[in-house]
Amino acid sequence: MAFGSAVRERAARWRVAMVIPLRGPAGLFGPSCEAITELAVHEINERGGVLGREVTVQVVDGGAPPHEVADEVRRLVADGSIDAVSGWHISSVRHAIAPVVADRVPYVYTSLYEGGERRPGIFCSGETPRFQIAPALRWLRDHVGVRRWFVVGDDYVWPHGSTAAVRDFARELDLRIVGETFVGLGSGDMRRVTRQVAAAPCDGVLMLLVGQDAVRFNRAFAAQGLHDRLVRFSPLMEESMLLASGAEATRNLFVAAGYFRSLATADAMDLLGSYVRLHGPSAPPLNNAAESCYEGLRTLAKLARRAGTPGLAEFNAAIDGTAYRGPRGTVEFHGHQATQHVHLAVADGYDFDVITRL
Image (tube, rainbow, N blue to C red; front, side, top):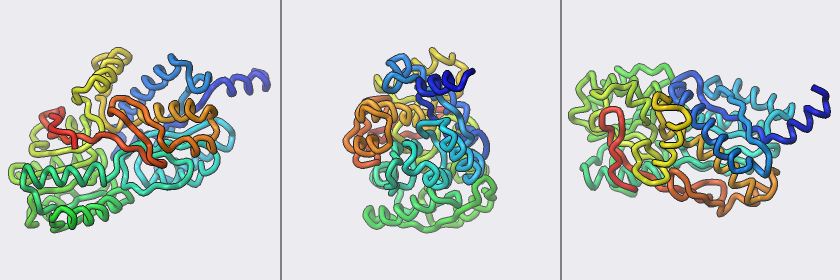
């Protein structure tokens, strides 16, 4: 292809690097994230793309070590291969990517996270502890009587930042944090952890564990018989993790999230129907982590329409007040952080029974 033709073809497309985990503890989210990304791209392009440009995606493995992910994104930005970044990945990866994309391309971070991200050009569409964890702890206090919590987390940014917020919530809600322990991401000894939990004077366990780490904890927890007497609550638990844990290992497990596959709203059911029509009934399980990737691409498309240009400066100027309706209901940005409805559910076999909107 001639150089001029290649430039014209590149200009006709709006290219997004989707950073999603294909390995590591969160790798079990990867197939669902890729599948729903395909659906989001298909829907956006059916509506004319982004400012008349066809949306295309390049998947970057967000399960690699953070510096490797950042190096890959840096290369794509430097050679003009991408116009934006999005996707579900852990906060350590976000911190590595942020300096690489600063003042260059927009970045919609879709995962739930510890909150507090204010760097220009980073737009956070996921849940934060104040609106996800705090109301769930209040509900579990009032309806289940859980007041004494033991925190179990992976040893990195999100669990530590969320635990700091939980300490504040405990004071506000008259709760007690009776113990905390953090394990190496992808390498923690969960039997040691469950022994600590068993010895603690707690009513419930707050799980701040990612993917396969949470699966391993659920299995160890049930093997020790703790699921019969203690409640578990997690802000990061989805259908693939239930399947991997096994139905017997998820009794008395509560989860708060902006989206569940079983959410019985018109918009959520429309998404599930579109997903199954595109990929068939054997598609990877639709879940909160994957659906967040759909939200990320929707946010980019909405921002571009509102700004009238795909430029980063215009995105920064347009973000405050940007809103749209989708599978999570109404999502609205206040500054660079989205707010959304959050629901509480309880695990029921391999799915979730949504109890209430928090």
